[in-house]
Image 1 (cartoon, one colour):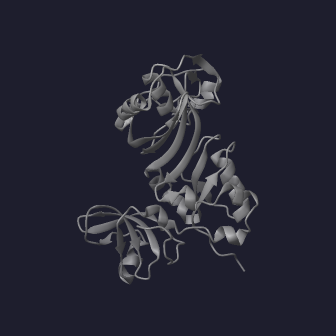
Image 2 (cartoon, one colour):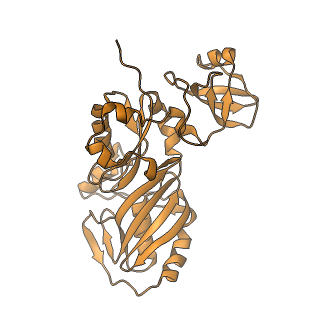
Image 3 (cartoon, one colour):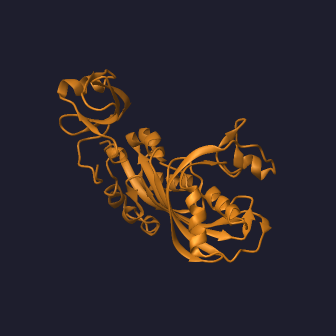
Amino acid sequence: MRPPVISGVLSVEKGSGLTSFQVVAYLRRLLGVNKIGHGGTLDPEATGVLPILIGEATKLTPYLAEMDKEYLATVRLGVSTTTQDLTGSVIETRVVPDVDRAAVEKVLSRFVGLIDQVPPMYSALRRGGRRLYELAREGVTVEREARPVTIHAIVLEHFLLPEFTLRVRCGKGTYVRTLAADVGTALGCGGALAALVRTRVGPYTLEEAVSWMELRRPLSRDALRARILPSDSALAALPSVHLDESGAAKFVHGQTVPAGGPEGPVRVYSAAGACLGVGLRRAGAVKPERLLHADAARPSALPA
């Protein structure tokens, strides 16, 4: 008898010293699944929320990329490195000025909103078919164009020079390492990221994630599978559309079906409550964008 098809999102805590790919490979073996990926890379030394997409949910990777994220970032002033964090080689050290909390908060306010950010050389972006970090390891530096990123909020959580900890809520494409370096530059002494914890990705929080300690015990396969959230938990921010039997049959075969309401992407469900995928609603109709073929009807564990 064939095992049931497993689909959904497993929110886990990534441990320190591991790549996101290593966590995926470990969970592939632990869960006994083949189709698996993650919803947003974390640097090896960073910890925190890493959404794992399983089965049909892997089709929803682009939607997780659009979600805002929250981090706890510890910045070390007075040092600049090749990687913009403390894992890199030191380029320069400078005396840390005797600034107070209010002065730091004033500088941080400049980085809230839509800002331009130059991606670091040690990043997975491609240039001429190669990753920038590959070039950086060979001692090659290339020009990178500044890109617009959105930082929704920065809160100064702890302050004890030469370090302070920030809670950063930001949009896609933001490099927190670069933010740390840029804040250090703005304070006149340079800075580097000393520690990073991702506390949230969209609706997935660190408090509700499967801890790395639990994963290393490890949990039994059945216990771990019981923690998998439905695929549509990754779509909680989208409005929903429910189709009757006839409309659902047409939708899953790639046809556009009538559906009134505001225009834009929507979660699409059958009358029985099964998530059929993502549609694009325009002019009173919804067109299939991403179809989910394996999701049975079950309640989402996350609020819409």
